[in-house]
Length: 194
Image (cartoon, rainbow, N blue to C red; front, side, top):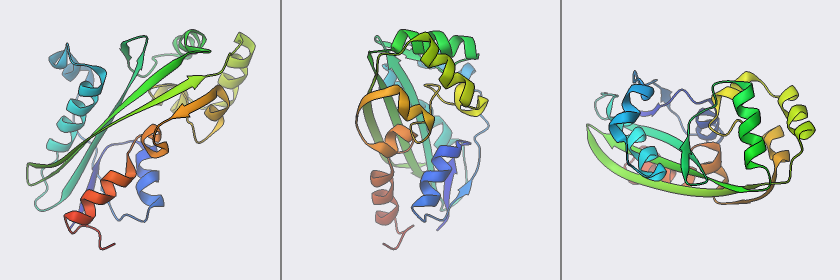
């Protein structure tokens, strides 16, 4: 049975690869910016779940288990998208310094158009007190893939770890995919043997 990851995320690919899961990547052909207004009013956690659902259901491959995943950052009760510029990221990091924020993750797993599992995960990350010069130093060493390609503008598995004083939640979920519940579903469906 084929396993399909409906995501272009390098982090999600790395998580599955690291666990030895055989899978194929099929990027969903969705315009997330156009889709988000249809989910207006949802909590950040439910928004992540509905975006994951749209990704998973957009892939039509018979008898394959399709994994759709999304993550929404919530800070001060508001959802945030990926920053559009390094300047926007810098201001966001200044605002979040010495405060917690939440990563709301959602995973939908489907086979033949039927939802097999809905997984919600919340992680809380507390940034340490940061001065502007700390943030400038951080921005000088990260790539645009991290700065503009991740919802928080950081990769916890890289230099981004230096921004934090405390994290609460599943490490894999913070990286973008709650691996252990996903593995449970894959085993249950016979897509993984052990």
